[in-house]
Image 1 (cartoon, each protein chain N blue to C red):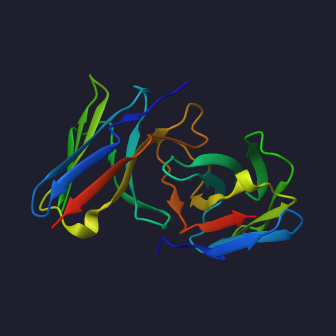
Image 2: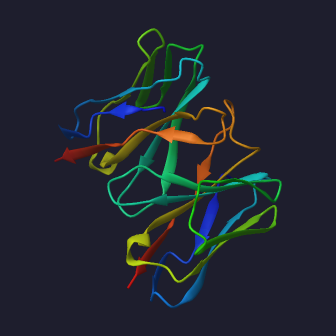
Image 3: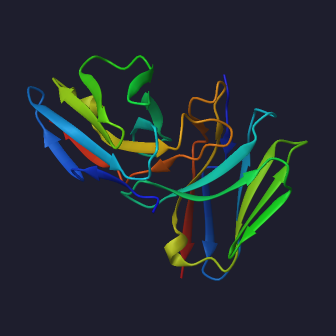
Amino acid sequence: DTEVTQTPKHLVMGMTNKKSLKCEQHMGHRAMYWYKQKAKKPPELMFVYSYEKLSINESVPSRFSPECPNSSLLNLHLHALQPEDSALYLCASSQVLAGPQETQYFGPGTRLLVL
Amino acid sequence: GEDVEQSLFLSVREGDSSVINCTYTDSSSTYLYWYKQEPGAGLQLLTYIFSNMDMKQDQRLTVLLNKKDKHLSLRIADTQTGDSAIYFCAEPAVGYSTLTFGKGTMLLVSP
């Protein structure tokens, strides 16, 4: 089983709302990733967790707040977003932190629209 | 910084072969990946090749690797309309913390 699940599939939110994106994997992977993908562009890395600790934050604005409550779950809390934050948010996991022999498996994404 | 290059668009007829090309930058990359993204969907790992291989075949997919030229290609035999998607090649980023993706090649298969 190489499945990464994400909920919700679609999300529409206003600029004053607070919402959360969820990601789950049951492959025993200890590294999890959040990516943002704009239309017709490759994914851009946002955050990396390794063994439930934040390992990398790619200078993401504080209106995005990641959380890794356990080794299977990864959340992305959203608050006071801007319309330009509308994008597909992808979660991925790998057995350990991505290295030359670590393969990342992606979820289907959450399509976010900020009005 | 690193830059993985791909042609942006490829159009083929159903039943033809498709070849998607990629040029990567890091000669020390040990694994190179191809991901497929269908419209509105996430990324699906299609295949990967280890750098000590020149070729890898998996059913209709053939990956060719030219390490000297840092050139990677994905050949899809007997292309079907269901193969229409964006194909990203990717290599481990410097420091190996994540992947560096190419800009993606949109493959359009017409009946």
